[in-house]
Image (tube, rainbow, N blue to C red; front, side):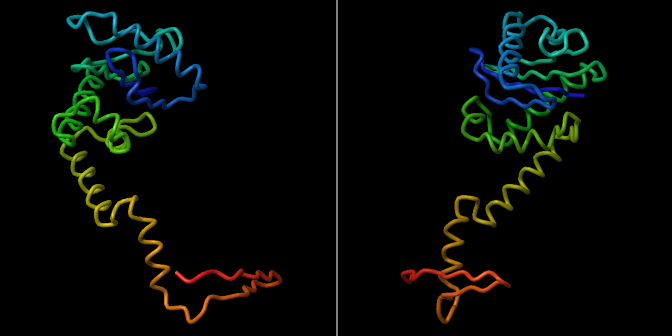
Amino acid sequence: MIKAILIFNNHGKPRLIRFYQYFAEDMQQQIIRETFHLVSKRDDNVCNFLEGGSLIGGSDYKLIYRHYATLYFVFCVDSSESELGILDLIQVFVETLDKCFENVCELDLIFHMDKVHNILQEVVMGGMVLETSMNEIVAQVELQNRMEKSEGGLSAAPARAVSAVKNMNLPEIPRNINIGDINIKVPSLSPF
């Protein structure tokens, strides 16, 4: 099972953090720092697997990572997961990000955090791998994008709500609302 997914840059700044096991926030910060120090000091030509740090479970857990340009993608997994399978999963995740953002970079992770989290949820949920097919993941992300566009996106929701209220044909604004034994007096409001 996947215990955590950490993405940070070459300077140790977290860009995406997802823990699938509860840790207090200060413990999460220590795990991120320790993981960065363990991974960043390794050469690029050495193995991409190492035993988990002392904070995240020691030898029962493994850190599996890939270093792409300025970002480290680190998956912390228990001993039941295949190292090569997780490396492949990291590759699928990065290629999916690349396809969705057209040459993904660190800034995409910063400014499109919601979309990155949606993509990650298509791949992993609750620490379990859901999907490994990049085409399926991209299809679901595109479906989500189409739905958001058809709804006008979340930013248009308040404007739609105001226009819906304005377009209501109420003969007059109710002054007293009675619900059972409850009587509510509505103050005088100026018309829209």
